[in-house]
Length: 199
Image (tube, rainbow, N blue to C red):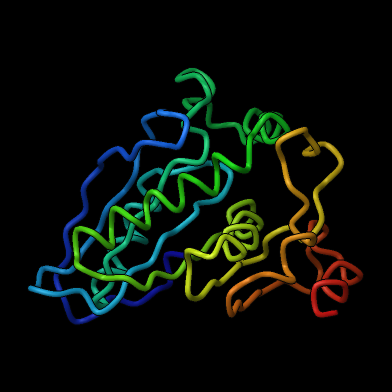
């Protein structure tokens, strides 16, 4: 993620909140180029560790290329103590408790905010790992014009199955144009899952 080269524009980054469809306040990174108009809008879904300086920097780097960017916290409804833990296993244990209607709703709310601020309509979505999985689901929401999923799970790991968590593969027949990138030896995205996604 940090390998994205800087673009030609200076950019600013701020933290704001968007309101989820359940009324929850969702901390969100906003980044924009320091110019009169953005050339496009992107919503970023972070990996399982959520928004943090790494994603402030990634959003800023995207903004230096002319994009208006929003990145909501995926665990906004977890406790502050749960969000503060730097051990990924705590958040991994929380995935089965997520509600994908709220998760995708937060991405759509972030898209609406960034588009309204910059007078844009079209918006893309990109995500990493767990965020890549959520990107596949968001790509089927009808709100996004393009999607890029980086090494996102195609089928739910057994430990992540919960009442409100959707199977990513079930959504892909309805997605907007989507690019999905995977590692050949990634145990979270086995070859059989990638073949199922292609099919």
